[in-house]
Length: 143
Image (cartoon, helix red, strand yellow):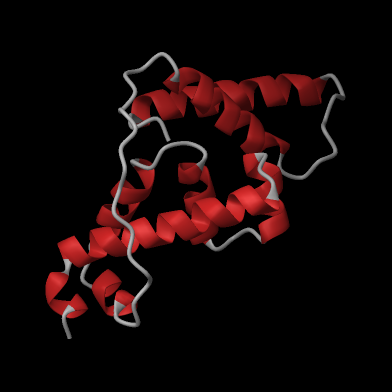
């Protein structure tokens, strides 16, 4: 999320230290994803001080049946880089969605989004990803 593994590790460790200190005093939140949410908000706060990319319009294409073949041509790091370059909150929505570990309710809770906003971000992100796939793996998209 921060684009710098050292910074991300520092934020995560600070989050864990604070959580451990709170737990030691008997203050443990009852909601299941409070640690994820806290770490995310800390990352967002930390990233506010960094240089921010200018918003830009990205092409969008409808998802094609060949998309899975195009994805197979990618290195896993390429997908991670693409998702990490998305603006917030789209980056969080895409990352949580593609982790395939959370249901929609959990994603809504973690990302602090409404269902309509999550839906819009995922649809837009998937269409933008298809446009990017068409550039990265064009031979498959023309089959």
